[in-house]
Structure formats: structure tokens, C-alpha cells
Image (cartoon, rainbow, N blue to C red):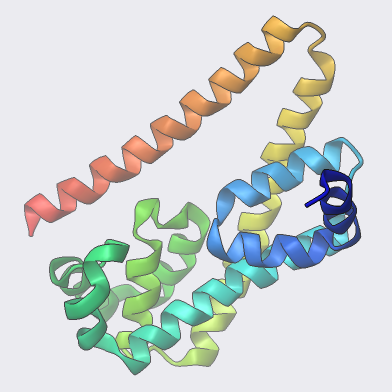
Length: 196
């Protein structure tokens, strides 16, 4: 396939590509979109709407899977998605006391690696869909704004940095921060599993 043709498709259908990418990949797409906003490649309103549509689509999917297939899904496929019986039991216990704050906070923190478990458990626990979506939409607004702002700031720094070595150092710093966040979420998950 001709690279020019592929680039033409990406430019023409940018916002249609952002939504499924956000649904599958998640937060990194929002960060990259923030950088592209700063570089004036894309516009803010359609970008924010596409990001929100993609991430909320994933939230609806996990809620529906939890509500429709529940325990059966955990037994057969849960291990592939980091959804275990112990994490579901822990999430159910938390839901019985604080399901509203858990859904909202999970959205703002990307679940520290628990997002799928929390969203799945919302469906499994029969949290009313309307309430679930209201909390997710409120959290999504703040989450998207925050990630786009961080990406925009990184794009601004990128434009200010002039030589190649400094740009490489900037990329290394961003990679280090992302790896640290990933490691921190894994640490939190393993700590909770040890308590169970």
C-alpha cells in the first residue's frame, strides 16, 4: 500500500480513527491527541468528542459483558483481561458500600489498572445503567480534559526544545513516567491480590 495514500486516509478520517483507537488503546491516545492539538494538526472539539465516544464505548462494552455474561466470562476468559474471581469479589465488596464514588474515581484514575474489573463488576452487580453512564460521563469530561492538557503541555515543550538530543531526552522522560505509572498500577494490583 502506498504510504501517501495511507497518510491521506489518516488525515481525511482522523476523528473516525481516534474513537476506535481510544476504545482499544485508551489513555495514550488522549495524550498523543493533546500533542497533536498543540502542533495544530487537529481541532479540540471533534477530538474531545471522539476520545469521549471511544472511551465511553469501551465502558459500555465492559458493563454489558459483566451484566450479560458475569461469572461465566470470568471463569472462561477473565485471566486474559486481568479479571479474576478474587478481584471481582473485592470489587463487589467495595460496590456494596460505595459504588457511585468507585465508578467516578475509577474513571478519573483509569482504575490504576482496575478499570476493566470495576466496569465489568458494575454490570455484574446490576448497577443501574443510567446512573452508571451519568457517573462515567462526568468522569470522562474531567479525564479527557486532563489528558489532553498533559499532551498539550508535552507538545509545547517539544516545540520549545531545539536540538535532537534534548528531544530524545524528553521522549525518554515521558517513557520513564509512563513506565513508572504502569509499574505503580501493577504494584497496587499485586498488593490487593495479596490481601485477598
